[in-house]
Image (cartoon, rainbow over all chains, first blue to last red; front, side):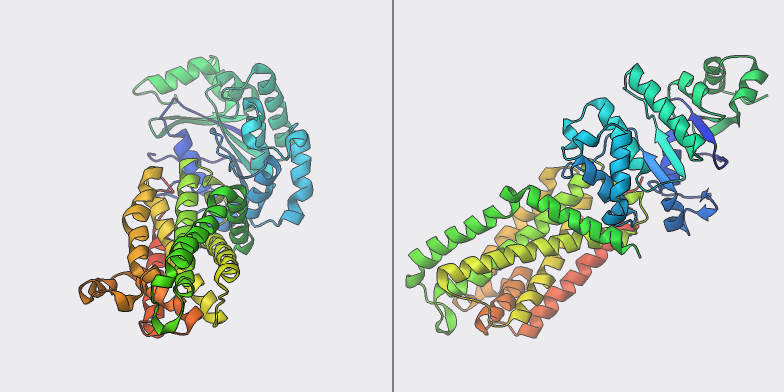
Length: 227
Length: 253
């Protein structure tokens, strides 16, 4: 990353876009503590994620792109144990786990191994796991990659609902129509540098183009900067 | 401190052990029963053990240590490596858990498993050759100490390994040979001095000798020396494992 300075307002639906290898996942890794910082700082709801990392992490739920579930646990236990790692006792999170399984259509699969789930169901489980600790910031890394249109629309509706309930959402996606439809604010990154950050509509209006054209302009041109 | 997180991980390790019970619980029991039968019952009457004890009684503590060492190293090394390889270690790394809590969660789970296996084999030993520990405190202290040493070693190798094959290197080329020559089967008194000299560099020798004391109230080396060596090595390995985890070695990019 090279001098990226980014601010996401509480309650925002923020889209973080960029081509492959631009630094989207690295940015997410830095926010959630999976990457070692060799400079700069990150604050999550006012907490420094290096010096006050325990407080900062309690606010965050991460839905990674890959399915990285513990294969020795049942689907329900995946949620219960994730809450446990966040310091929440099983008896205190049991109801929430059942509610999330119900909400994501996984209640009937609760005792199964996650390998028995379809791709779409695994994607839903990823989201349920990210929500088990009641985060205020939900970070989604390509949440709709590889899912069918029906599930994608379903997930969009769900994410919008979570955002309406006050959850801040930080979304990376390669589907620009997804970002255009869901995100109020957008950041565009190219080769580790932030080349745009502003409200989606302002950006599109000012450029007089669709998001795809703006995205290509900003990420392809060697000297592209906002003007 | 996130003690709930640490004990959740410890519990998760126990769940894992029970899910693969045919790999981790039954094999040590069956292997021990076979060793007792072949070396103890069939050949034991022809072998003289020190201090007038029967060879079968001499054998049991060594067999328990063999399984404790194997189980604690295997548990931590494979579990940490699998969590890295399949990337579900992210579940802990993004949570408010410190590197210390993660390492101790794995190690506590591993020690518990080693304790369970040791107690099962102790029961088997009682059933087969009617022997039980005389010093229970020492019995449990040595198991915890040795399991801590090899669990920490397991964490180190689990973090370093690039493929499963790497985990077997230590077992194949160090742990198993050193346990076999570390007086698990052969009383130290019977070894030629030229070989005995090398035993002082073998940590298994100290572990087995100290543990045998809990059964027979007799040991080749002074008990304090064996305990000091095992504890020192456990502290060293634990320190290395913690340092690797704190720096995020092969955990954080």
